[in-house]
Image (tube, rainbow, N blue to C red; front, side, top):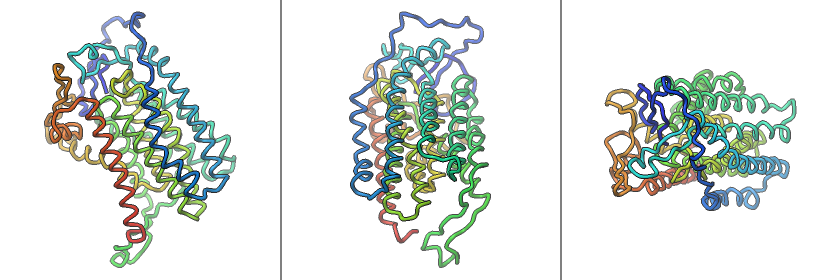
Length: 423
């Protein structure tokens, strides 16, 4: 994250945004002498593409996927790849426009160094959101018919994502107070909650069946309430687990890769057509999310040449929430979000006001050594620094993303060992 120029009196707990009041100042014009943003890090993208090798192996060799279903997945993958290149090309263009509107920031974790004085364009997550929506909407032409049972929920999911992207951009521009931010996902999730026509039942874990006496429990409206709360959690958990170059996008890339692998495993292992379609539905949304996020990651990785803003964190969180809800694997999704759950629990005393919450909950940066030192604030970033010692921003982000990947691997192991016993 970074800091854009405007001052806010609110006390957001985790955003690394410092702002300066410009309402009574003449609007700054873009300095033509400002250098363009750094080019994308293509080498990084090639390395990250290795995350897709298990997915491709399962799709093409390990599981006998039906040709028609594989064809739809590949069409979606091709469109997503096109979305990646479009996003890479559009980010430098959009960065010039947001700088004209004074939506730029200074990297707090580089304060006192030459890099700390560089204007970094803010809110570039809007590009990712727009390209994602265009890809997802155009894909309907190749996969859904006018009478498709999934079309209503698919468009409801896109409406939620579009709504959340808009609210995220409004937050970046207006600097919405933190307490209001908690309500925004609830509003954005309304289209999905109103259009949802799937089951509202849960399968009782086998060890509890003998005590409860039933195998399936219909929750009714409580299930929809749970869906709304899941959307709120996923959206805000990405937003508060932040503060380092590449952390917001990086965690999304890791989780999205795990979701892809999980979906293809469930499709390959199932014989239920409806169950397969639910996970295919999830793939149709997560592939463009992963592709466009990788494009943004190539600019946002250390040293960041753009900031993603709340626009991206809200967009990514809502997208993964609707993917988990409509793919019917919300329990698995929460385990993928294990680092975000831990970060939330660490943050809870400050978020609830029990412990004073500063404007920024970032580690302290030493410009002499270039290292970060953990503070007593309740974030996973500071927790890692307090226990692992001082780290550079890049090294710390790698540790956190590795922890995210370990959490996803733990989820797969847990499902493997509990299969046939838990459910």
